[in-house]
Length: 350
Image (tube, rainbow, N blue to C red; front, side, top):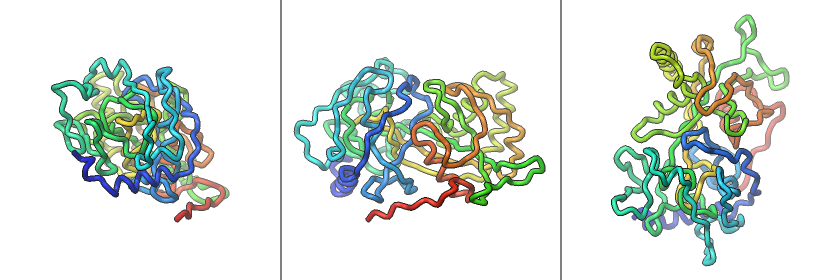
């Protein structure tokens, strides 16, 4: 199995998490009733003694994955102290709670069977038919037939609300344009002197917080297709449109998603739905409408998991669901747009 080949690599990752000094905070929005609902995004780092995704996003890891009660339930996780998160740390008395939601056990098309079922032999760390079981962070360990969360202990085994054993892949489309005046000129911030960037934000139905549109990647679906589909469903209400309207939306989306884009992040996300055996991973991509002409001809309309949708100015004053503001911050940095009125000190840990 894949776990036999991890050795020192997994040990290093686990130790980095165990050494991280983190503060467990409230998960904020706790209700996540739908599997394809917009999801929490947080990051893991290697620098400053914290695990890292491929893009060096700074932030604490494995906070939301240890909070209770588990979303959509009254299930309390076993408490995992900071120093015992990493699998490298021996903990003979570790006794996590077992929980998989009834909605998952019912066997919907997006969910795996239980590991114990005789006809279920998943190919972990591989492409398993149409199901992508590879992790964006490399090989993960398998123990007693179950995949092990690469970020460490969560206090809960099973799958919770997640459909797949191991990585559950999602997509975050970040659509941006420059804020302009009535003459079509870019508006700059009076303090930073940098142009102000705007992005399309949705207000989640489940908790009322503003967020980036996003959701799960279907089996066999390309990330690019998932990004386009999720934006159409949540920001354009495409699911409720007529056939003719859907064709027109598809043309608009094709133009938009053919524009300049940046892959902002790929990898593990710290999500309150994560367990020891199932976890969220995402690919966040920024599609930028430089002239604004495409988005000027697209009417935003909330749909699916979104209650509202609108353009939002990007700055460090944003208060977004989970850690979505850190995705947005990285977009602002990549686009050389306004973010903060004050310079921020970097992380200089060894």
